[in-house]
Amino acid sequence: MLNDVADLDRVFHALSDPGRRLMLERLGQGPASVSELGRPLSMSLAAVVQHVQVLEVSGLVRTSKLGRVRTCSLNPVILRSAERWIAERRALTEGRLDRLGQYLAGTADRPGTGTADPAAPDSPA
Amino acid sequence: MLNDVADLDRVFHALSDPGRRLMLERLGQGPASVSELGRPLSMSLAAVVQHVQVLEVSGLVRTSKLGRVRTCSLNPVILRSAERWIAERRALTEGRLDRLGQYLAGTADRPGTGTADPAAPDSPA
Image (cartoon, rainbow over all chains, first blue to last red; front, side, top):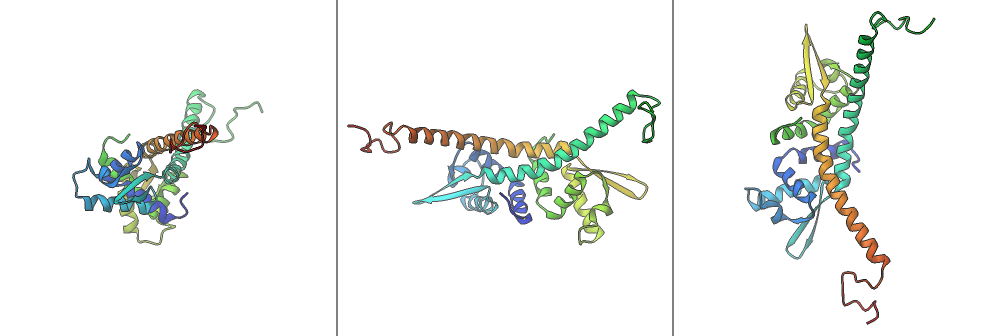
């Protein structure tokens, strides 16, 4: 779970780079070594390591080292926190737009029942 | 809908700033003018305008101008695209971890069916 604003800053910053997103896509298939992650990317190993560090600092990726091989894996908990932040704003906005749509459809269906006037005589008085 | 990699770069970059996320939280409640968006933030109007531009370029926010007032609103379609990208990676990883957990629980329930070490002297030889 993400605890503060700075965590979300780091997660969305980590997600904003296409190379890092490609690494995360690979890790969605299962753990991988740093050199495996770098294979499809045209960059130096040093650059790959830097990207992995950004992902690790964000919490999106966990790494462990056995001998000379560092293995990376995706942390779904952090992905879920970022997803939830977006989903909450999206749901609020869609809910509001749905209600507006229903209101507009309702006023279009019932000509003469008034629009912005809450005193419109729609129910039997 | 987001069409290419550069679009997601811009969306996640826009989301990586706490001030911009605060603006999006406000817009989750409904449209607002640029100056309303800047009110809770301790920054100049020029800085607020710059942040709004980043949000607009990302597609997360749409703006319209009437007279001297520019009104901003949240675009849920773009939020949904970013959410979907995260959700797909998260679901893949969680699915894999669930299957691993079920496998491990299965092997724990059935002692003698072999674990990591086939030579373990647990089963009757």
